[in-house]
Image: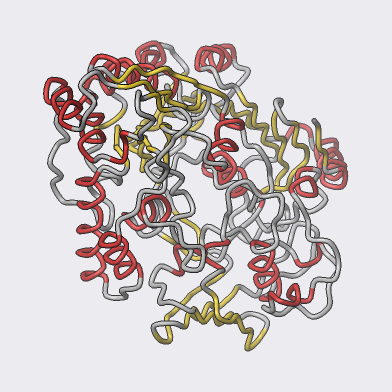
Length: 538
């Protein structure tokens, strides 16, 4: 399906026709294709990265995940429950309309009225808002129901839309009355066609073709430093071989995630370079613990073995994480003994390695009442994470060796995420790139008991629940004092590791390869941002 922003496309064609010699174009091969340009559609790295090109948030994360000013120039906490943001007064949207606080309020209301979303982006944050006021057009005062010390980090994830994309009366934060919106709330298709894709980012959407790619044009109204590139083409190429072949042939200027085994060839090839940086992405296993009768577990008595902590520990002890890093990831990964990298806020300073001991794993299964093991299906993606299907295959083999006869069902991410959201799986391999708040990012989203009112646990598909853990985590995310919050998060992180409601595998490293004359710093969040690709002297 092809979507085209005719207005933006026409303007770009005229610009190129006027000065063809000055045109600067960049072609990027993506390892994972965005599923939409609606910034609130699905919280995926590929979607979030493309959204960063078209839209802006109140803050923005730099390559090391530090929050910098964006549409807001500054912010401060007036008290435990009140945040005040000062907004820029020199910003216009890509269609020329002026940006102000009403656009921010409209955006937050839209996150709560987004019927076409797959995975919520922003809803859990906005749920905590008691009120949003605008003392003047460039001041925003947010009062929360519960204390939220990470408000600037959280709001840096919510891309701001133009109120002009819908019919409305006066915009106010009044959810019961649709915030003043009188027309139809825009769905994902309105963004994919370009009709609603009006942002304040460095580029404008020209065309979005599912399965083929995205074309962006430079936003001449952008409030920040103008990007080098007049036009950017992003092409989905999920297989690493064709991505490298396209880079070698000159079809692509920059590619994501070349296979680690190909780095030697890239180093030896004149005219090519690469960068590798550690990422914040954990690859982990999630188990169905909440249901007594789980659909893809095969036991003689119909029980759910994952409800026994000894079985979960056996699964962990059956997996040789270092072997996965060395043999599958070719050294471009790090074994994970907790759910965030050791240098992030709230991490366990020196985590105890998770032991590889298949003999003890077999004993644990017998102690739990499964001396002959049981049957299981592992569900995973085959086109989302680095070497995801190969990693999942090896995990299945490790488990089969200790008596858990494991079949692998690897599928495209669009099917996987939809089925996982419907809680269809008993045992799944997933990934999560932690950002705001360090340890709080993964723990509040995945590990905490699902509580829509508190905005936590939305991705706890396996329904693991521990009241003691919940109490510590909820206290942590409502603690303003950073030293106290870090200590609480470390306790919660250690408890999550000890209880093994989720099993960490490894942290990905991210690699970008590019032609001479280009430079890219790499990012811990794994985003590929065209406006951060710079030109160098060849």
